[in-house]
Amino acid sequence: MHIAMLSAEYPPRWGGMGSTVFHLSSALVSLGHRITIITRNGGSGDPPPIDGVTVRKVKWARIPMGFTRSYGKYALNELRRLHSIDPVDVVHLHCPMISWTKKQFKICKQEISPVVSSLHGSWLGERDGLRIASRMKEAAVWANPNDLAILLTGGYYAGFENAALSESNVCVANSQATKQDFMDRYSPPNDWDCEVIHWGVDTEMFIPITEENHRGKLIRERYSVPKDGKLLLAVGRLAARKGYASLLRSFSKVNKKIPGVRLVIVGRGHLKKRLEKLSRKLGIGEYVTIESSLPFDDLAFLFRVSDLVVYPSYYEGQGLIPLEAMASGTPVVTVNHGPLPEMVDDTVGKLFTMGDNDSMSSAIIEEIENPEGLVKKGIFGRKRVLEKYTYESNASDFSEIYSRIV
Image 1 (cartoon, rainbow, N blue to C red):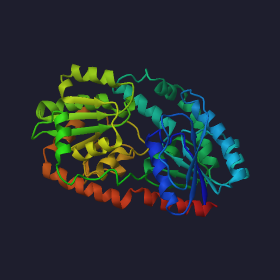
Image 2: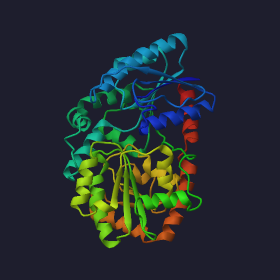
Image 3: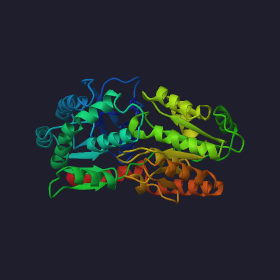
Image 4: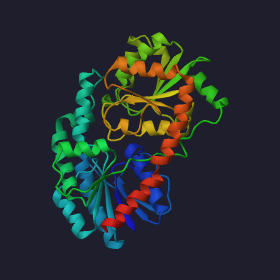
């Protein structure tokens, strides 16, 4: 089949959605499908080429939240042009970063093909995550233009998500929590067809370390990890809802009890200086390193050599960082909230109460004080990812959905 994927993120925009669409497309091609990506123009560099995948780029208005409407309009126009010269069998939208009205959905179904809408999360969920972050005194909740736009206009843009629920032939949520979120917040039709498919991760990039080689020693030396010390890793955009201020406050408690622990945070965003200032205020500045970005290979290796990954986010549709850690053979400590307990439990890490610094620090300490347990949990985490969270299984599941609705 010829599948048109409409995604506002695609490499070189390597966000969670961009990475997912890239790998899903490749896996679908291996099953014999052809994929055309319609995404936003701009970004630095070109996407890695994939035989069987064609990329078309459209213009968009660089307005927080408003880009979802403009991108949606231009993507539909491009989709019509594509269909006129190379008929499309299925249109696959990646929401919520594309906003279509009911009329636009109807045009697509009448003139082009059936529609599958992947639900990566909801704007109202994002808004609630920011409100929680504000109550938890996270840095700069109101200073980021994108976050401010979500807080002020999330209710308006939720209307386009409701259109996706009512007009798509099939919706696919990336977790049970996301499906329930949409059922609770919106008005899906009585015959709503919504399946749950958890996204996979790249199990060839994220692999366990086979031995503590020279490179691993250099990385631990770079972050001043003592010989018998532990390295904690947190990865994700430096945004208020990711919970980094709470992580730093929790880490200060860990550091007082176990001085040999170091924390590395990797992520782009506007909060770096604020978080570094908080680290110094808490007296842990010399034990915390914030990397704005790392090459993919270096980041993947950092996952392998870390002793524990911490993921304190206040809201996720699914959350891929815990799976990338598990694929790397590294246990995970994360929140007992939303979709995270669907992937993480005591066999691969530990859950803590969201926003509770004492709960987070206790969970971290309990894990790193049990090195044998870390090894066992790392092995089981890798096994779980290979069994349940791969792009190959994603492609197979979506291929069945495409065949059913065509």
